[in-house]
Length: 222
Image (cartoon, rainbow, N blue to C red):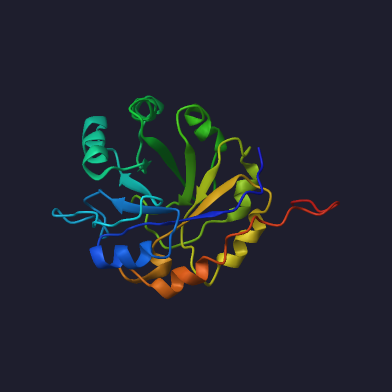
C-alpha cells in the first residue's frame, strides 16, 4: 500500500521538562521518551511529563528488550499512547501489548543489507514499523542509511523513518514519494546537546507537512 497522506513528525529523546514544553508548543505529532537505561537520552529516575502537556501530541515510550509487565506499568504511569520497541521483541509480545490497548511501533535496524522478510511475522501485530540505521547499540546512531533500500519494502504497514534526519537532509525525504511513509523521527539531528532539542531546527523540519510528490507517468525507480 502506498499513500500520499501528510508526513507527520516525531521528536524523540525528550527528558527536560522546560524543553518539552517549548517543543510541545510547536505541536509535533509524537514525542518520544526513552526508558532504556543505557541510552544517554534516557529519562531520569524522577522523570515526569509536565502539567499542561498537549493532549493532541501522542506520547511514545521507547524500550529495548523490556518485559511486557514493566512496559505496561510505565504505559499506565505516563499515559503513553505508543511503545517503540528497539530490541528483539517477539511478535507475541507485540500482540500482548496491543491487546492491552497500547499502540506498537516495532523498529528494524537497517545496515548495508536488510532482508525485508524479517518484518513479515509482525505485520498483523503492530500499528507501525520504524526503519532506523543499524549501529553498534540500539538506536541513536545519528547516521542515515540508504533510503533507496526501502524500495524493496512492500509498503503494507505504514512506517516511521529514523536515523540522522536533520534540517540539512530533510528535503531528501522526497525520494520516498509514493511510499507508505507515516512520519519522520528526529533526535540527534535537532539537538543542542543529548536530550535537549533546538526549537529553531524543529521549526525548519515542520515544512514537511504536505504529501510527497507522486511519481510522474513514465518515471520509475531504479
